Image 1 (cartoon, rainbow, N blue to C red):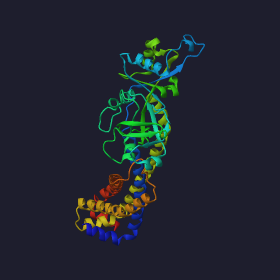
Image 2 (image 1 turned 120 degrees about the vertical axis):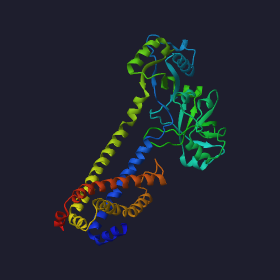
Image 3 (image 1 turned 90 degrees about the vertical axis):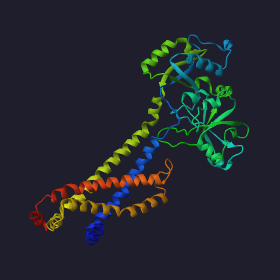
Image 4 (image 1 turned 90 degrees about the horizontal axis):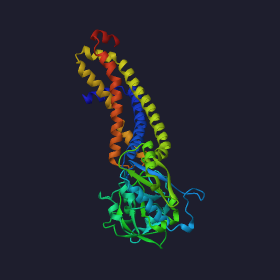
Length: 419
């Protein structure tokens, strides 16, 4: 049957040539659309490396000198780190609170932008020199417990850093760049901020992403020390609290009212709250608008492709009623005729595959595909090619189905009239 179909297609090569050219162009455009959607979808649904559920950010400030309860410097006997630690303790003691942590420009979705030069003491310094600097997150050890960050082995990072001095936690991307898969990374040392300061690697965390639209980058966590808090200032801290259950904004306002004086330590006090999810919405709003515009454009193009292919094969089948009638008059079965027409249309589509593969390799060579967020793997090409040809195959079958179904139900004499 296939040989017979190929012979007929060759004899009708003039009309089939235009259809083949249309299918080749449409397949290339559709494949590019599906590949773009594949990259966006896979990137968006990849693990972030942290969890922000039920987490709120408490806004801190210092009392004005004219405010009631202001403590003058002459009566001030504690440091910024001590005030922050005491405030954390007072809030953590509430039975509704699960955990508390402090960060500086490192809270998820806070647009933190702290970078520092980092070099391994006994690793690949060429990679470090090429990168120049890495994102640094200044956090207290409780940060890993509050945001539920784990090591690459699935263990809690908090257990690796709690109670330790001058340690850092690196991401797998930094570990791979420095040590290229070497074992026993934990315990090695790195320089950061020049060769004046070195820290021990306490753990390798899972990959950490800035948001759902970005890939994970090489970065590290610096566990906060007292002098770091003093240099930034306690009121500049990102004070994060995880509640034991979901709270609405009104419920959190009532929670703050109930805390009373426990939200104040000397001149440091809490003056407001915002859920981390609000920061996420603000950061992703522009990217989500761009993604929605892209999806709308893809849907519009897909609808045009859908009606274009269906219309082409519909018209083609309408013009072949005479051929169908002749085959019926010669004894062809209705089901056999339908199968023949479907196979012929799908064969035309299959012949576009070599051209699409050449087109895909050309796109790779010219670096027109997004290989930054998602690697160019065999699985990626297999899935995108598969979706492309399944969609086009369905469209072709729909375009063939109705006119052929109608034609094979005609009486042979009436069908022969078209011949």
